Image 1 (tube, rainbow, N blue to C red):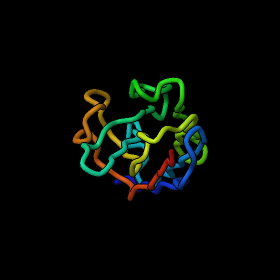
Image 2 (cartoon, one colour; image 1 turned 60 degrees about the vertical axis):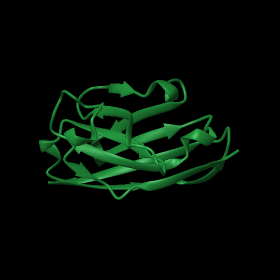
Image 3 (cartoon, rainbow, N blue to C red; image 1 turned 135 degrees about the vertical axis):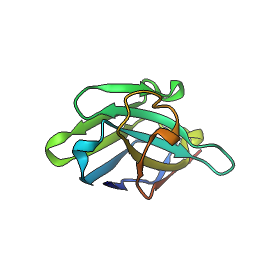
Image 4 (cartoon, rainbow, N blue to C red; image 1 turned 90 degrees about the horizontal axis):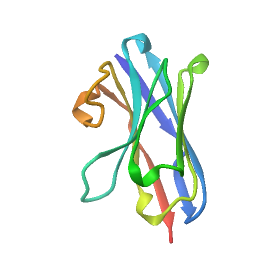
Length: 124
């Protein structure tokens, strides 16, 4: 099992920035990648970005390309999501999730362990 704890959410004006952190503990070596998902009320959960522990970013949602950057620090078992030029439509609860799979990573069902989420609210 991998335990994940997110932090860094909050209220920010449009055009502003936030950095989310996801600290992993437990059987980290069993996971291949960590993804950041988001879910707004009434919407399905969608993958925003994902990164492998021993490789670079694997995916970015088209609408966040050029604005969001996913990175990792293996020394402290932490994955980050740097969000810049935030837009109202980025408002959602953001979750990090770990997967042992290396395919089908767009689907939430491919992720075995989830954090509790952190709320990001962008005011227009």
